[in-house]
Amino acid sequence: MTDGDVSAAFSRQVAEFVADVSLAEVPDDVVLRARHLVLDAVGLAFASTRYHFPTSALHALSAFGGGDHPVLAMPDRLSARDAAVLNGVLIHGLDFDDTHIPAITHVSAAALPAALSAAVSHGATTRELLLAYILGVEVSARVGIGGSGGFHDLGFHPTAVAGSFGAAVAAGKVAGLDADRLSMAQGIVGSMSSGLLEFLADGAWTKRLHPGWAAMSGLTAASFASAGWSGPNEVYEGRFGLYNTHLAGRTARPEAVIEGWGETWELMRTAIKPYPICHFIHAFADAALALRSEIGDAEITRIRCAIHPVPGKVVCEPLEVKWAPRDEYDAKFSLPFVVAAALARGRFTLIELEDEALHSAEILDIAGKVEVTEDPESSFPDAYSGAIEIELSDGRLLRHREQINRGHDERPLKNPEIVAKFRETIGTVASDSTADRVLNAVLSLGDETPASAFAEALRA
Image (tube, rainbow, N blue to C red; front, side, top):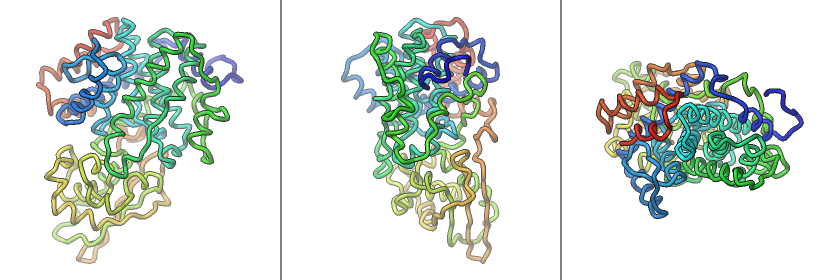
């Protein structure tokens, strides 16, 4: 932090930094990486339009009336808040979007829609938009880090919970709120921070809605703060603040919210996904692919997967359901299915989430051989480890461990790899000329171009 009053509430200390910082103070490598994170998010928004869920979301939101805000990857327009909801759905809907590993939070999916809607509403430039997005990511990441992995353990989705605070700060920064009102915006949005993991029980679509709802909550909170509405000062550390309510009885670090501002840029620890699945399973996909070439003509008789129990609750329970996912979204959160598909196909792409793969007798047979054990050597929550042991019919025992998942800040995808992923995802629905237009717009972020013109360039 800067020279603010260290005895002040955490939300106030965050607000003082956010109110004063400019894009010129953000290191160049952070700005460059931010553009590439935005590029990844926008490419995924386009790819999502191949599926039914964006149309369903659009119908639901259109019931509240229209608006003039562009929607990513679609020709439609909605109100500022409803556009933010749909943009969050589009970015996060394939569960292929970035994740801040220690926070276990999809940071762009709420921060970008909130910053974009706020920037268009206030006639801001892409310089102001990019800074607001970066600050939204920084807040979301720190709030998630403070949970020490406990949000998932108690059934809360930190993307929704932490993302609401990041969205409020992003929207408030664009709106020009001073430190007093930026503090209030965080206090207000605390009462809107929600997101349950119960979708894991039946493959429901609610998780897809979480970051868009967080973005809308952030926009709403910033607007109320701008109008003079008050929020509690100690929204993070107070007796009934975020951590004492959402993580009652669990280890939490509310002070993480104020650590490292201006010195550590958490955006640089944000991982780009190499696979369209829950981040908890990426190491297992890589481990399975590493072992596949060693199997040869032998038959797989048993597969043991070792995982930390907290992510295990998300991707391994109940095991009977995980052996045979009910739909593509269910499959994204099934460790057995992902391992089996990687072993059967030698890859895991969006194609492995289509109906043909979901009903493949070969994949389902292998998935049924997966057993799950606790991993005492896991690096969770600092990294998402995965260890696989495969028993073969010829008596061989194959083992492979991925201690740090690919995409982690210690094994990051480089910017050219992100561009390649962008071209692959947007290429599922758009022409090369559209991809070039979007690429040029995103990688030019941070100048005096009106945010409204930028938003128009990202439409279908």
